[in-house]
Image 1 (cartoon, helix red, strand yellow):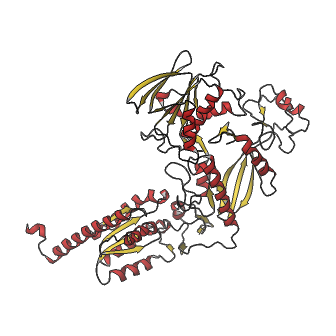
Image 2 (cartoon, rainbow, N blue to C red; image 1 turned 135 degrees about the vertical axis):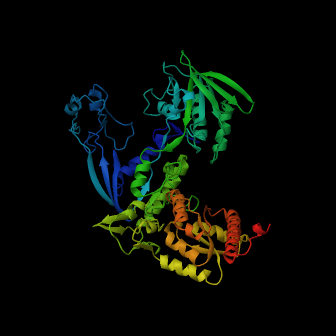
Image 3 (tube, rainbow, N blue to C red; image 1 turned 30 degrees about the horizontal axis):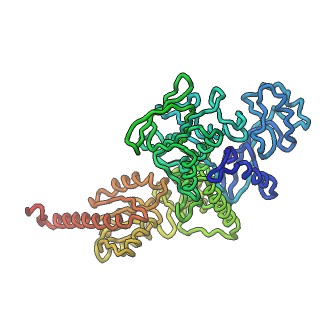
Amino acid sequence: MIGLSKTFPTLDCSQCILTPKMVAVHNHPGIIMITQTEVAEVAGSPGDYKITLKHSPRYVDIKKCISCGACAKKCPTGAIFLPFAQAVPQAYMIDMSKCKNCGACVKICPRDAVNLEAKEETSTVSVGAVAIATGFEPIDPSFIEEYNYPAPNLLTAVEFEEMLSAKSKTGMRLQKADGSFPNRVAFVLCAGSRDFTGKGRKHCSKVCCIYSQKQAQLVKKMKADAEAWIFYIDMRSAGRRFEEFYHHTQEKGVNYVRGKVAEIIPKQDGTLMVQYEDTNLGRKGREIFDMVVLCPALIPSAGTKDLADKLGVPLGEDGFIEEMLVKLDPVNTLTQAAFAAGCALGPKDIHDSVTEGISAAHKVSQFLGKVMILIPPEKPMILECNGCGDCVKACPYNALSLESGKAVLSPLACTGCGICVPACPIKGIEIRNFTRNQLKAQLKAMLGEAPGVVVFIDPYAYAAADIAGVNRKQYSSLIRFVSVPSIHILDADVVNAAFEYGATGVMLVEGTTDEKLTSRSDDLYKRLKKDTRKHKKPLRYSHIETAQYEKMTDLLNVFATQAGAKAEKRSRKEKGEETPEEKV
């Protein structure tokens, strides 16, 4: 936010809003602000993390620097600089790629704050919880060949914004490569987003529609007779006062063209030809502009995946942090003491980012304020271990580790998914309350009186079955539900037992959206299919989320019918009777 010129929809100065907050954080006795630092390693478990930090040298001691600027004036290459006028901490730093090691800055510094020999350092901190706010970065639009980026006067929205910000090299003045003001500016939305061709990103970047209109308004404010054009697929102004902002931009005389830009062609004179399709008018067109601004897809920042992996936090298909429940637990992750906020969870505006930041801070405070952390009992019990480490490799949440040649569980990091159970080659791991013997006893009891179709079902899919009942949806009376914390606790031992006790068919129903589990479901199904084929009875897998209760009843009924028909056919053959097909 600090790098923006103005913020929508009020067009307030971003630095005027944020700088007082930055200073307050820096001066707060309960907050330690560390710059030029990244997380190198995470050890321990939720509630007791040991985090190793890697500090990149800035070559200027922030405790000694008084920000007098004498060093910057003396530096012949401009290597020493203040990040921006309102930077916190208010201290200079050196870009060593530009530095010639002449030592001029060292000699002139009145506080002896410059150290050109500074090295990278590490430190370790103990924390109970983590809030992930790694933000976003714009995608590099150079992969869109037809846009010919980069080229003179062809910018991204971030580059446009930097030109107008307080740290601008142009003095907060919009200008072309030759220094003149652009009289015709085009904004191309969805440059690499909402792209299902496989080249770009599928998701909408959410803020492009509004910030492009803000930038168009700034162009008109700087020069009233300048032309601003916005090329868009759909104008999405979903936010408080956003629709009014949209209409206000129209009143300023900004031109809107609904349609995709086919090509941007740089010309010899520095102008750019934009070829486009206007879907409202049903025609193709071309226009010459002095400047074209691409609004690129917003993607997770480079450090998001690395940090998520270290914390054992799953990512979504789009690469952003995966929420525990997008509606009910939007800032919780599947790791108990790790929370996320802002654009680490996906593209969003400042208002929503601040709201999530407050929520995540509150969640952290709640977690740290607990006298006792309640852990569900359905966790792995390591009954026997030969130190092979297969369970450690299998666990997608880094909840297992080898210590002194034995597997050790971190209960807070563990989600109870049970992937470790079938991974153990000596069957030394069981899930408490869902051991193999307990599941077999349940199967024997429910199939003892009459055969049926066994459905192993996780809590998310079980909720769908409950909703189906509430909505008076009916499924076959042959269905026998066996609730499990996750279908991944199952192995051939349990599924074979179901068939042996009289199941006419077995179905695995999964409702979780956690990709760390669902990505392994196909392999689980294939493995169980192979290991239980001797029974010659149907085994099926289906993914049914909680809201898909109608799909649930349909699938159960179809499978029960198919399994029943196969069982009847098999029974007739065993008795030497003709099947209906043979009679025909």
